[in-house]
Image (cartoon, rainbow, N blue to C red; front, side, top):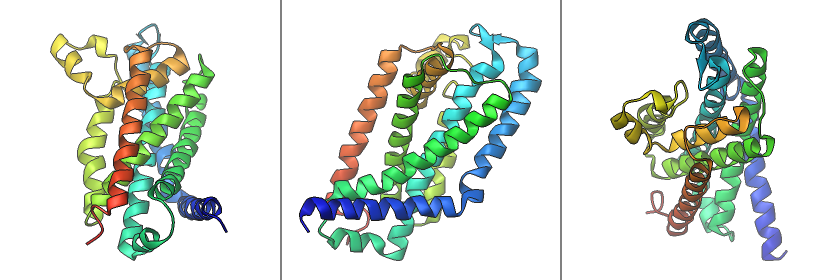
Length: 258
């Protein structure tokens, strides 16, 4: 068996294991997002949205739908990879992978594939919920697919980065609670940044989630508070940066090798 076959076998084995893990416990990994987003659409989309009226020329439920979908996608992609990698550390599986004759990029690809798939699966479920409430239409189909894929990949990579340095399960939950959740809520999910004062509008531009939400919103309803080209450049640039960073720490065993 040559190196290419070894790499392919390792990738398929690792990715299948991680995908099977989150599918096996789907009531804990997929259904909570469906229930949570249903409540968001019901409360904000229907009850509150009926009083707000239009936002940037579209109904409020149509405006928040892309943000809610993106919020579910990035949270699940991040959590899946972070927990998956940390569990591997906790059980000692990572050490076995490190001594195996496979490059770091194969390990990275195996874990992130699972995170991307979970993000996309949850995204499709939430899209189904949005369609029930009438908050989903597609203006640019291919752009929508590209953004949801890149966003899942980016936060899957970020989750692996967290999993590398986590010392316990509390370290996994700290980042989503104190960093990821504020970024998503302040990332233009429920409002247009054009409604903010100049200071808060400029401050919002440092939030990476803002660019993902607006790029995805442009793909669905055709409106965005941010330049689409700027949003895609930042999204791709951050993905490349995290990919290089993860390969670097995996190559050197930083965070989990004595």
